Image (tube, rainbow, N blue to C red; front, side, top):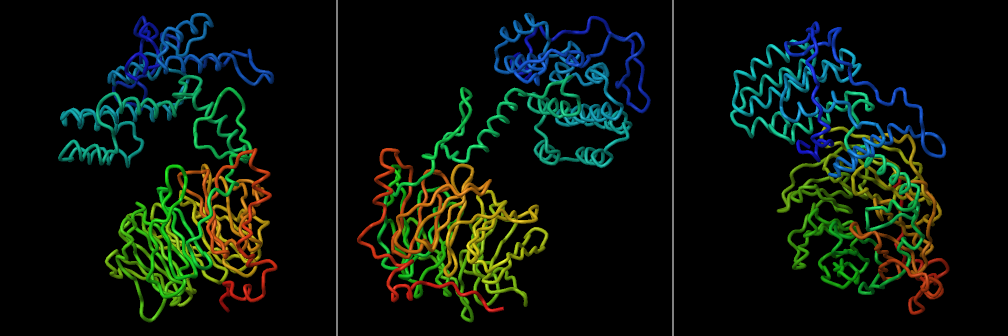
Amino acid sequence: MGRDSDCGLPPSKRLKLSKPCPRKVVEGFPTGVVGVGSGAAPMATDLAANEVETLGSRGQIRKVEFVRIIAQALFSLGYQQAGSMLEQESGIMLQSPVVAEFRQDILAGQWDKSLGTLCMIGPIDKETLKSASFLILQQKFLELLDHGETSAALKTLRSEISTLDINTQRVHQLASFIMCPSREVLLDKADWRGAGEDSRIHLLEELQQLFPPSIMIPERRLEHLVEQALDVQRDACVFHNSLDHALSLYADHRCNRDQIPTQTLQVLEAHEDEVWFLQFSHDGHYLASTSKDCTAIVWEVNDDESVILKHTLTGHRKPVSFVSWSPDSTMLLTSGNQEVVKLWDIHTGECKHTFDKPSSYFTSCAWFPDGHHLVSGGGDKCIYMWDLEGRELQSWKAACLPHINDLAITVDGSHMVSTSAQKGIRIYNLEVKSERIIDEEKAITSLSLSKDGKYLLVNLVNQEIHLWDIAGKLNSPLKYRGHRQQRYVIRSCFGGSDQAFIASGSEDSQVYIWHRGNGDLLEVLPGHSGTVNSVSWNPVNPHMFASASDDHTIRIWGLSRRQERSSRTAGSSSAAIDHLANGGPHELLENLRPFQPETV
């Protein structure tokens, strides 16, 4: 804006009022803010007010509004001639001459003139007029300060802004800006973009929010309407899982079922015992897995989506049950099952530190978003905060704090969430030092947070997965059912494009995928021959996820081809691997890892 294409009108459309109109000072307004006298030129009126002609099969679209937003889109795209021709042929102007002049005054920094034009824009109530005048004068004040004209800025503050008698707190803030020692400090404290086109465009956007949209159409209105329509279509598409965020306008959006990864692309067999947990790194380049064989393995994801072994991490004396990736995906935390937490360098595979409490043990861990601090929790009913050198910085202790099973920290570091073998989810607000407890119906076995840190998933032993929001707006959880879970620790995750799906393992050796929004069960995927303990969806590739099983393997899942679907279904299980659950040999069932609820 400020140029022809930015203002939305070509020069020929930025009409000047032919004659100055008689004006009178409005009571309670500063000098320069005027009212329209009896001999004033006509105000800009609601151009759609008397227009009844409609378009569309349902008669819901007013023709005047439709033409105006099309003209706005043409001008904003730089098609000045096309926009002008539309106005000429339709006889419908995008903006009245008064509105066009007002926009031009704002963009040119003609503050006193814009205050006069403001009063002629349309039927605006006194409070709206004051609010708009305040925004204009605030911009004038800040630009004077930015140009070093302190005396003129002070005069504007005292004789124009203060006399409006509104927003007293902001007036005091503006007064404090006079003492700013530098331009940089002024921009920072005022949260302002500086004198010039950018801040004036922002001012116009703020002013538009005060006026009726029929008088001053919000910027990019057609784009906004189209985006709304696409959002509705995408949200209604239960299989939407596209890498391409741009949707076609030529037809209503609808994805097929083949957008869900249901094909086993690879089976990883490096672990020598049950695989209990796995998690993709935040950048999607690595996958970490843990096993009853007391090791963790770091896998590398290639560009062709193949997965290869990078490091086998040894050093734990007990089975490894938990991992957590650093925010930059260069370090990994591993937690032994009721043991220690170890910090690893992903590039070298070297153990950089072991976090230990001689009188206790750990079961879970999580990173703060700065990548320099972490927390661990476990059997002594405490949560400890550490730096990377192993210094204990803080601890959370309480007599009522239960044994910690799972820990997670939101992406912004504002909340810490923990679960135990009991029925409570504890959400700590680290900023205001408060705690909220969600009481669940049954014992909780695992916890997972959404990428945006707004939602959490918990698996329960009653064969349900519950979704709660961190902010506490949901009175009851969204529930996902169909999988089997009664005895073992099963982990679920968010996944897919916009994390629109919920995936979980199951004691029946299958992977379950639900639609997050409506709870519909979309896919049940066979392939494993033992309890599926954990699933993890690649955070940057919605067409890839991994599953870990008691059958000692990890399966990498991707998109299936229609012509291969029938053969995949017929031969998805490996005959070389014994079925370790659901009818397997008794001695093998006895060796499966049980989940033992804590006795209350």
